[in-house]
Length: 261
Image (cartoon, rainbow, N blue to C red; front, top):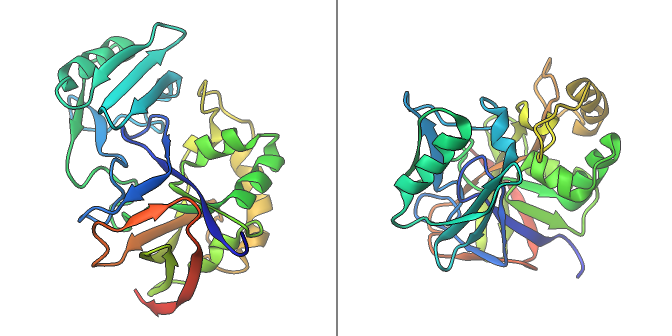
């Protein structure tokens, strides 16, 4: 297939847990993808349990049957247990509470729990970018995907191609994936999560320093003066009027131009 195209779609039904790969994803009225970060685990103070705050969350394995609304959970070589995401939220909460050793609760909300509340559309990265960054640290593509946790992966382009979907503060880059119109709004600031092994939570020594050294020259001045350069993948907004439209693997990606944000 010539030109950029949608190579992978990944959604994260329970925030901070592993993703599920889809062949297509529908846009919701909230400007998100169906099932993406629809659920979250919170503690007794209402704080979200994620990889930044709780390293042990990396030890949880999750796989999904979204058609049947099932999640299969396991951790630390324990037996896998199946739960319904539609009626067994209390049982899932107890499973996580036992594993973590303190009381937590699985919650959901229609608009989900996006990583960026301002730019709540799917995050975008290219396969070539993941491969290039992985080569800096000796990771394969699976490791790179799980560390950076993007929703849409674009193939048919060189490394860091997605950076062109950001045009600077106060601007947006309008682009189309299949039938869906999106706006590139920001190059995502990264947290501690990419520095940790996605299967064990073990840190990669010197990760941020090496990442910034290699990454800053590729940004081509797109970051504000003095910015650290610890950025990767594009934060987006789905344009109004896209509810119900569907992203599909193989969809062509077309950059349409710069508009006011």
